[in-house]
Image (tube, rainbow, N blue to C red; front, top):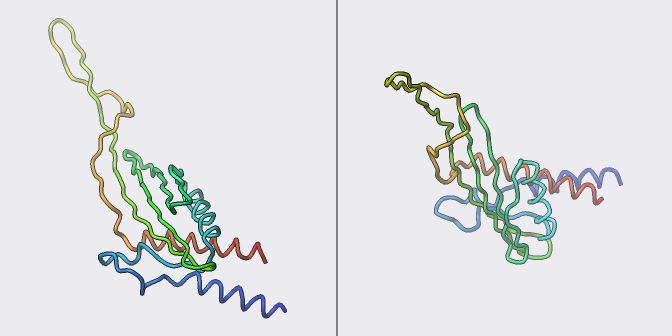
Length: 167
């Protein structure tokens, strides 16, 4: 019985780790979608848990329409990168589902303000410490396949752990 359980665990791990490559080609971005060997409810719960573990805040949940959106921030010394993720999911049959996602980013940089110091009709600009004012310096879509692979690997791990809890 123990060997059968171990074999089941290994096969589930292999099946969940293989990305879907023969599906729809979305302009060369097939890494943005894949099929998962799980029910729609399992996928939905796995997506929510993966987003939360990734420090993303879920903004919109429409399970009936198969849509999730989330936002998260990455803080560096002088910049904030805001990442927005839109995920769509649907059932293919009772035991498999499809998930696809698109992500974008906005980079904001902390700006130095200046003040005025004046005496006897002379005014000099002086730097004021960073005050928390930010200006957008870049934005775009995330098209890095490794970024998406990292998300899907995290999702696979969550789905696998949930399947093991159910055994």
